Length: 212
Image (cartoon, rainbow, N blue to C red):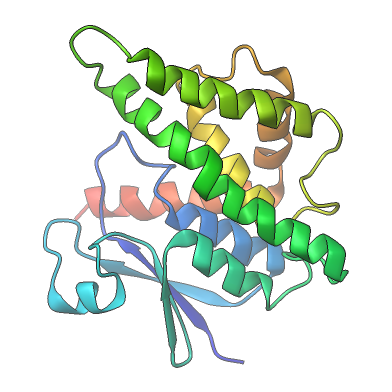
């Protein structure tokens, strides 16, 4: 079996550590028990090879034999096709997991990301009500969904990796105070051993760069 390679930055500042999106892929690989190695690309110099794999000069990307994939959602979907620990084998649940994977990124993260950026760096005059309201509306929908089951599509899946990671940042910034079902969902997800290992490995990866 080909050993997959996950590429992330060689170093990042302290603030984003534990939240760089290669964590989503590490988590999925650990959940599935798939063999992989981690490679580094320069944080400070985005060279031609980097752009050939990730045209927006971001991370992560995954190489799997002759296949090179960027965008965390696309990588999660690819890994889901390789393990029923990541995507249900039942076609109805599989379709549901796929839909929720896209919803995590297109519906929830699209609302949470601008809110998160403005929470880290508040604009003069404070958070625009439109940004806060957009996120609140999305979280209210998720609160209803998450009140009726542990995971989004039956068994735990890549949809939960994406959604929990999106909500995890909102939780860090205090945005889930009024959404107990969302908070409980994040707590269940991050208690999983695969998340714990993925998080520790990412933190160790960046800490190692500090020593060089």
